[in-house]
Length: 335
Length: 101
Image 1 (tube, chains in turn yellow, cyan):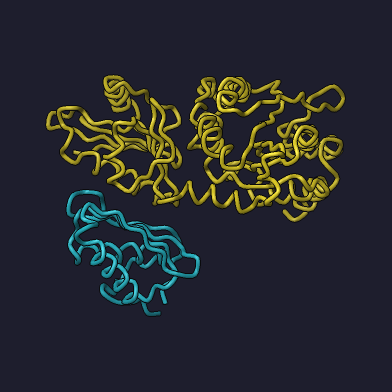
Image 2: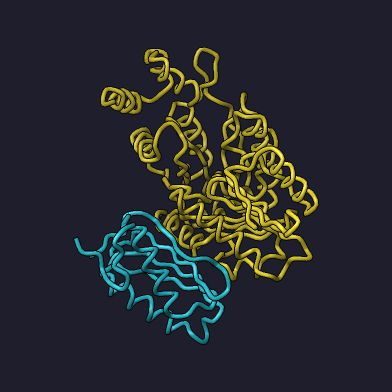
């Protein structure tokens, strides 16, 4: 029998948590949908869950393995994802499940000692690497040139971002700026792209890309998007950093990564700390740049968003480039 | 011609079935196949897929099949179901042919 819930609650949820503990997995608070297969005496014998476009906590009781239960579970999960319009799917699993999920249309992006990270698109990640290489001018691959990277959401683009880019450009010849493709921010991805494009006019050594689900996304770094809630305390970012260092940085010859200091948010701060530990192991130096301030307060996109919400545009004005100010006010008039 | 309007899927990963997903294409038919019997029947599955799309008059689609040893009739039915769902046609299904409006 199949039990499902979006998400499971009460007694059923407790049973699922207990089963996962037995399987040495932890129920993730971000989970929005779970499916469980029950034995004749109503015990859970297999399960899987969905958190945004990521499938996780997939486990089958050992005595019932090899009977095709994983196929049933995955079919339900993929069905759920498609019903919610999500087509680029990811799965986290243990490296020993490689063959099982390969046979169900999943392809490896990265494998570490503990985790196997897969997607449902053949060559999805390779095509992403190809795309960002194509977006990069020939000269930026020159091994005598210093190449850096910044990953940012720019929700919206502020003088803080611009300052970070300027500081980074002082230390490298080319700077790759990766803009988060995630659609859950206040400003839509295309709007953020447009603001950055206008805000960096004249900064020719910047190369702008999309992150396309492969950097700081709900797939690579799930807790980033829960930073306001309690569960975000534990940053789950190793995989994100390893993927960046082992594949993306190598592909673009990036040797420096720049981040702004993080005064407020614990998740981002932990991410920065982890970054300083992990990236240098792969030959990528990390530079933490002190945030630009206005009236002694760090400029941050969240403060700007608050100004927009409150309608206090005058307060926002000194924190964003003129072009961005115009863009935002134009947008708001349109509404 | 049937327009693929939104992503849709049909089928399962159970043995003897196949999971078919369709998405809006980039002007052509883009086909990807995973199959437990790809060495024996890969070409045949591909043929069934292209024939079915032709019958449905679908020319712009990303079609992905994860096959678990489905028979031709199953593959055909799953592709048709995915395409109909994507075109938001839920009644008067013209099984085996194109949607005419």
